[in-house]
Image 1 (cartoon, rainbow, N blue to C red):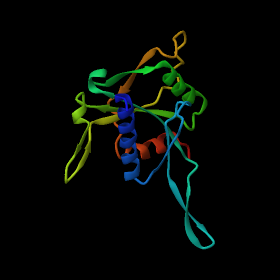
Image 2: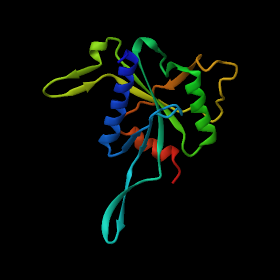
Image 3: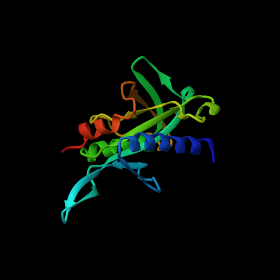
Image 4: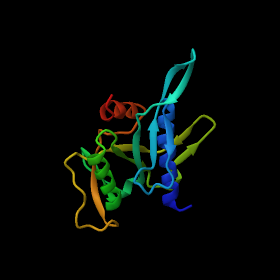
Length: 178
């Protein structure tokens, strides 16, 4: 595997651990040429013929996953600036503008610069370093006109958008209408 493939696999593992910890279900999409890498949903308990059953909710969050190292970022006191390929950015914008009730979120998993620090395993723990942040374009953001799809655009992710065990529930609450 290339280093980028390894980073991508670790970012998927990170999101999977976070989602699974809270009982959410993940569906990996292959191929991911539509700009969405995974869907996250949850189960609903229903009663069928007097017995409890579980079915998937219609509520779904869409995620585009990216991974990078600390040295590839620019930080300020309020934002993390990440260079995202224009084709990926445009798909986020398209989702935001055309699917207001089911937007696609970017999750940026940030690894330490040293590859040896990415994963630590002992008899007492499994540690996947370092952390992740989520991003959604503003409704007023526009597609990157005049740029090639292989060019990059800087995405400013608020440092308050940390992706942790409470994030998925908050995203469902704030972005999926009930």
